[in-house]
Image (cartoon, one colour):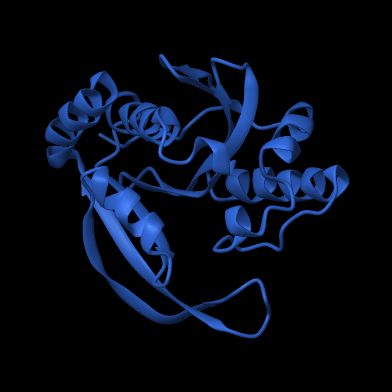
Length: 200
């Protein structure tokens, strides 16, 4: 059976709600991480210095996600009701039953909080259990050890490195990318561990 493409739905947990990213989220997003060099250090864009720059970038990210068969989501922290980051589904192939989760960032105040764990739990549950995906992939800069550790905590397997994969946003240096994946038959164990972490 061929998998289904993601749709711009709303996914709600105990700590976060994911909803399709739109211009209405930009003020909160800018307050959470606009212009923060550390937040944007490994992302494929320069830190936005104004709300207008962030709005333009959000429009681009939404368009690129749609073109790749995916959806861009604003991550809403339920305690405050504010958008604190975004994440996307992209590189979707329903025939091959695979997609990528990426272009993810959160304001620094939400690092090492339940936000990322539950965001990924919601996305992965939707991808495997509603869409019928067989493989989810992540990739990150080889130098971004914090992101690599976070991906491994999801239960993903490190697959390898693509050398000189992408020009960084500085326009000068080249990024080696580390690839990770989680397969559908690995999902039940990963799901139990993620739920246990949230309950802890």
